[in-house]
Length: 241
Ligand SMILES: Nc1ncnc2c1ncn2[C@@H]1O[C@H](COP(=O)(O)OP(=O)(O)OP(=O)(O)O)[C@@H](O)[C@H]1O
Ligand SMILES: [Mg+2]
Image (cartoon, rainbow, N blue to C red; front, top):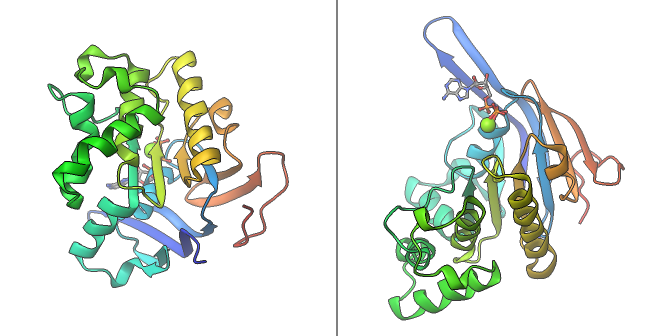
């Protein structure tokens, strides 16, 4: 089976005016297989979000190869990229990004409108995913009627509705208190273990990263460490299940 994510010598350089350039990614090689649960760590400015944006097909590298589920990102049209984003990728953000004045159920249904799931199926699937993350009783609540942890659960349910091949989460616990962070990470762990969902998340917090099976550390746009939770290094380009 093709890896979910394959990147080879991935570089991203931002040009700021005539002479100033920022190398956000300086040549990253990584493979992430289906079923993995990976945390990305590293100091501020080390390229974590840049990497996530490229993997999420929200941005393009300056050079290097990126294949998502075997398709070469550089060969995709804008429509094909949008299609993969909506059908094969789930996004979870630090700030939840739920629509206000819109219920949990409607928020969870939204990605299925874009991906063309028939209306008759949307409600059923959204309810099923809200139940999986444990917030089905909040189906008629708007975001301002929910705690941060509950909103993040709804956002996770929303990320699941199209059965993505990969969930990308940039600092998903960044706005949560310790207890809610723990609950959200237990939820990701369960989704990975029981539903086999592949997860790639960014965090600054070692306690959060400790839930992942594999921890990749970035520094100055490069991968400086890639280890399984228990410490064994992951051979470059080779990956554990
Ligand atoms: N749109 C942009 N234009 C110019 N430079 C950028 C842009 N986005 C990111 N950068 C620069 O690229 C580098 C990597 O940024 P990135 O956002 O990937 O870091 P990060 O590891 O996610 O940091 P943080 O932990 O603070 O979120 C930084 O030096 C940043 O200033
Ligand atoms: Mg970032």
